[in-house]
Image 1 (spheres, helix red, strand yellow):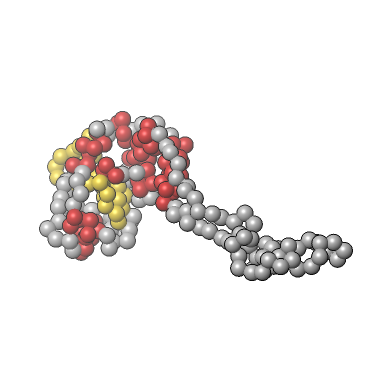
Image 2 (image 1 turned 180 degrees about the horizontal axis):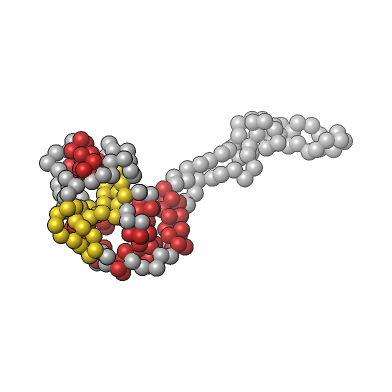
Amino acid sequence: MKVDVLKTDGSKAGRTVDLPETVFGIEPNDHAIYLAVKQYQANQRQGTHKTKEKSEVSGSTRKLHRQKGTGGSRKGSIKNPLYPGGGRIFGPKPRDYSFKLNKKVKDLAKKSALTYKAKDNAIAVVEDFKLDDNKTKNYFQILKNLGVSKSKTLVVVGEADKNLRLASRNVSNSRVTRASDLNTYDILNCKSLLLTEGSLKNFEN
């Protein structure tokens, strides 16, 4: 799949790059995508939820009335979950939601997501660029030149650039990531995918 390389001013650089079919042209596997996104979202959960059970609630442990002969149910204490302010039955406890996913499955999911983006013509290749400063307006101007300033955009670079990271963090609908850190959720969560020429080497590898 051949794609024109664009300059940061939005014009064509006069050359094309070949996106490997083994990454951008496979038969997509929807279940692998589902598992990868599920793992990503599970790993984002803190898992610090907690409610107090009967033994943890503050209150008297005095037996409210005798066991038998009242015609009512047995009540051990005011901390009974059936009373307002009592403990919660089987309430949430701190836990770890993360789970393991094989590397081959995650790779298949990323390839499938990239294939969908390629079919939707949502991928653009930009020549490598660096910002001289960390001003947001300079980064936003590049997005504007490429016609993606109003859509949710993911910019994939080969190497980390401090100025680019600082300039992009204040643009709510745009995100910059390294190709080595790319995941399935980020690919699917954007409308436009901008790849720098330097990042393509990671996809080939």
